[in-house]
Image (cartoon, rainbow, N blue to C red; front, side, top):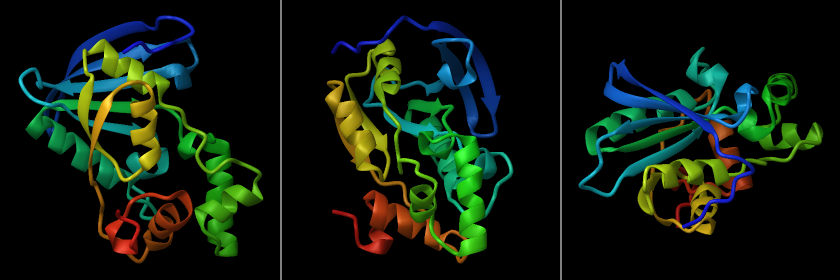
Amino acid sequence: MVIMSPQSPQIASSPLKTRHGEFQLYVFSWSANEQDNVLALTSGFADRLPLVRIQSACYTGEIFESLDCDCHWQLETSLHKIQEEGGIFIYMLCDGRGAGLLTKIRGMNLTATEGIDTAEAYKQLGSPLDPREYERAAFVLEHFGVKKCRLLTNNPRKVNGLESAGLTVERVRIESKPTKDNESYLKSKAMKLGHYMKEFGTEP
């Protein structure tokens, strides 16, 4: 498997103790721009098929624990499972599904004031629904010698992104139970972004 990248990133690593257990934390830095950094937390998987999660930053959900998405739940659940089963958690610093923090907050305001869902808000703002690319995530996996993985995701674009880079991917469902605060958001991901969700009848 060969991952093409404009340049080789600088790499730094350190042990990291968390309430889920101890990981080895890596940063892959393609430039001084923070969004050009990708983080990876690894937990021993040498003798087994690694469990992998690729998660994009959601500062409102993961830091401030907003109730209108399930990003914090996915973060916590993934770290717990990877610590338990062995694997790699890849964290991409691109909020708003790659649209950027400014667009995301403008979209959040539209959902709050006009009662529209995230997909409609992004459309109104002239932003693509999900412009993320996964070449750098694939580069990180290649760095660790991973050619086959179990991928924690409901998003078929992540599966396709890794498979197009030459990896063999087995999808593992990671679906939270909707709440009154995030049901509209989750339904939008299922019905308008094509995420696989049992709750909304889009699980194949």
